[in-house]
Length: 143
Image (cartoon, rainbow, N blue to C red; front, side, top):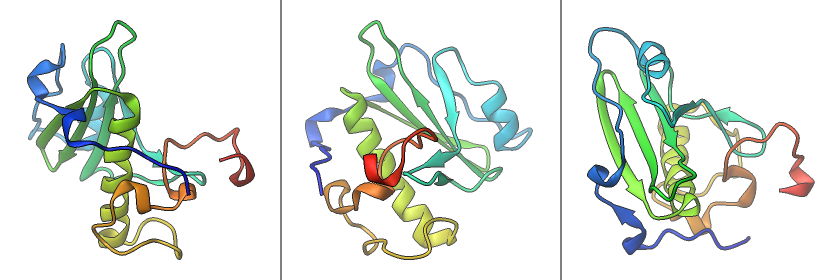
């Protein structure tokens, strides 16, 4: 298992992001995702096999990546409410997403069928195959 850092000083205030998604109680998570501000993108799959991330359309996850040195963002839409956090690095943001994915998979039962650690496991203790963005071109052997 490789290290997957998530240090307390890697988390920043959401206000440090140049733009943030807003709450949307008029539609569902797909509507919210289709109107994300520039730089944000919905993330529907996670881990080496592309397990569902969140529970669309009720819960949708989005990431912010900016090449101009802005923090990396994580937004979680939950039935209209939106929770946004910023991170100093993509690695820290992805580690936070790993922990979020584990919690949702255990709660909703929509992730890997076996091999998941216990609820509340820190990112560093989540097996590699359940971590990181889904990359269809990668195989379990290369991750």
